[in-house]
Amino acid sequence: MKKISPKKNGKFEFKLKLNLWKVGLVFLGIIIFAPLFLGLLQTKVDDGQIELSQAINDIKDQKVEKVSIEGDKLLLTYKGEQIPKITTKEANISFPELMERSGIDPKTINYTVSDQSVVRAFGEIAGFILPLAITGAVILFIMRAQNKGAADIFSFGKSRAKLFSKGKQSITFADVAGVDEAKRELEEVVDFLKNPGKYRAIGARTPKGVLLFGPAGVGKTLLAKAVAGEAGVPFFSMAGSEFMEMLVGIGASRVRDLFGQAKAAAPSIIFIDEIDAIGRQRGKGFIGGHDEREQTLNQILVEMDGFTPNDNVMVIAATNRGDLLDPALLRPGRFDRRVTLDMPDKEGRLAILKIHAKGKTFDKSVNWGRVADRTVGFSGADLENMLNEAAILAARANKKEIDMVEVEEAATKVKLGPAKKRLQSAEDKKITAYHEGGHAIVTNFLPKMDPVHRISIVARGMSLGHTLIPPAADRTHDSKSRLLNTITAMLGGRAAEDVIFNEMTSGASNDIEKATSLARAMVVDFGMSSLGPINYGNQTDYGEFGNPEMYEGAKVSQAMMEKIDIEIKKIIDTAYKEAVALIKKYKKDLDKVAKALLEKETLDRDEFEKIVGKKASA
Image (cartoon, rainbow, N blue to C red; front, side, top):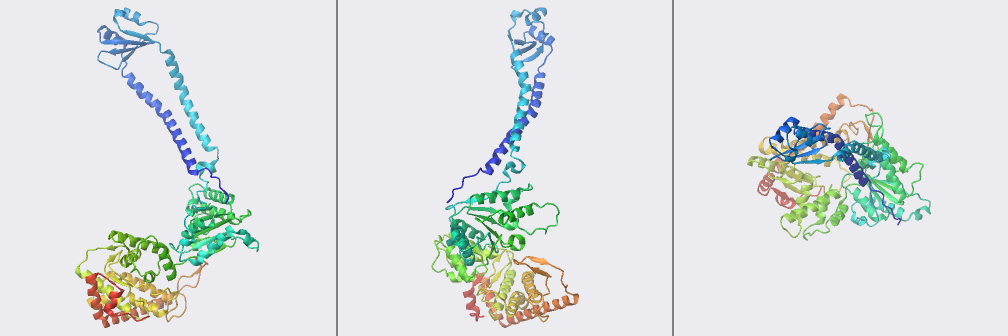
C-alpha cells in the first residue's frame, strides 16, 4: 500500500500562531503600561524631594548619616531611615565648596561622589530605542502570520478529516448484523477498490458514491467503520458540520483540501457523516445573498463529478434526513448507490443480540427468541443499549450472571425510561390499576390484537403506568379491522374508569390523543370510511426519499370537513362502546387483574394469562 507522508498539523499551526499573537500583545502591553509605571515611580521619587536649604539645615543638625553625590543631585540618607531624600545643587559648584559656604566643614560629613553620566546616557538611549525595537518585533510577527494569505490564516481552510489507515480500524463486517442488504452493497464497494481491474476488464465503472439513508441507530456509521476496517485503503472520515466555519469560503476550501488529500492517496475512501448539514436543497432559504453552505455543496458537486477525473476516490455519506438533500447530489455520477437501512426484523435482531452479548455473562434461562419478539421496533443501537443496561442492573444487584428479569427491565427502561417512585394515594393507585387493567382486558379479548406482554402501575417518564403490547410479528401492512381494534384497546383505560368508578380522569388524555390521531388517519389518509378512498390530507407530493413538495391543490370544503369530523367521531364512538361492553362482560377478570397489580405492581404475560386465560391467536 502506498505510504502517505504526514502533513503539517493544522491545530499545531493554529496554536503556534496564537502564541505569537499572545507574545505580541504582551509587548504592546509593556509599551503602553511602561510609561504609566515609570510615571508612578517618578511620582514616588518626587515625594522624597526636599529643598536645598532644608538639606543644609539637616546636615548642620547632624540628622544626615551620609550623602551620595551624583552630578548635581544629592542623595541624603537620614539616620534611622533607609530611603534617601533628594535635593539639587547648582551644577557649577562642588559639594565641599557648597558646605564651606554654608559654614560646614566638609571633612565632618560622610559623603561619596559617583560618576553616573555613562549610566544616565545608556538609560536615555535605551528608553528611546527599546520601544521602537518592541514595536518592530510585533509588526514582524503580524506580517509573518499574514504572509500566507487570508485564505490560509490560522489554517482554517485545511481539512480536518481523520485518516484511518490499514489496521487502524478494528471493526469489520463481522461486527455488523441486521442490515444484510446494505452490507452486501458495501462489500461490493470494498471489492471495487481492492480489485479494480476485474471490473474495468468488463467495462464497468467504479461507483462515485454511496449514500446510506435510514433512521437513527440502524448502523450507518457502524457500516462506514466496517468499510474502513475491510477496505485496506486510506479512509478519510469527516462530519458534515466540520466543513462550516464563521469565515466565508472556508467550507469550499476544506472540501478542496479533503479531496486533494484523497486523490493523492488514491485509491481511497471519503466518509462524510450527517451530510444533510451541508447537502440541503439549494434555493429553499428565505435569506438572500451569498450562502456559505451552498458554496460548500457546490464544491462537493464539482469534486465528485466535474471536469477533473476522480475515478479512484469513493465517497460514502450517511444521513437520516435524505428528504432534505439536494437533487443534484443524488443523481447518478455522484451518489450512484443509495442504500436504505431500516429497523431490523426478528432474524436481524437475533443476530445483533448475539454480537452485543459477547463479553457478557448470561444465565441459561435467557430466551433470545422471546427477547427478539419483545423488541419489535428496536434499532441496533437500542439493542446494544438494552444489553448494556441489563449488565448494569445485574452488577448493581451483585449477580454473577444476567437473567431474563434484567433483560426485561432494561428493554422497558430503554423505551419508557427508568422507574419512578411517585407518592400516590391509595385511591390514585387503584384508579391506575383499573386503568391499565382495562387496557389489558380489552386487548386480550379483541380478536385482532396481539397478546399483552406486560402490565405495570410503576410510573415511568410522564406516565403513571403502562401496558405493553408488542407486535407478535413484523408487519408491513395494517388492516382496517386491526386499526379499529387498536383504537378500542386505546380507549380501554377510559372505559374501565367509567364502568368501575362512574367517573372520568385526566389520565386518559394521551390515549385519547393517539386514538383520535389514528381515526383521523383512517379517514383522511387511508380512505377507510364511508367517504371512500379519497385523500383529504395535506396537499403535498413526495420525492424519492420522502421529501415533501408542496403544491396548490384542491382544498377541502367546509362541508367535507364537517363530514370528516362526523366520520372520525363515528369511529371513536363505536370503539368506545365496544370497550365499555368488554369491560362490563369481563368485569370479574378486571377486578382480579387490578387486585394483582395493587399487590405486585407489575404482571408479565404468564401471570396475566393465569388470571384471564391464554389469548386465542389473532
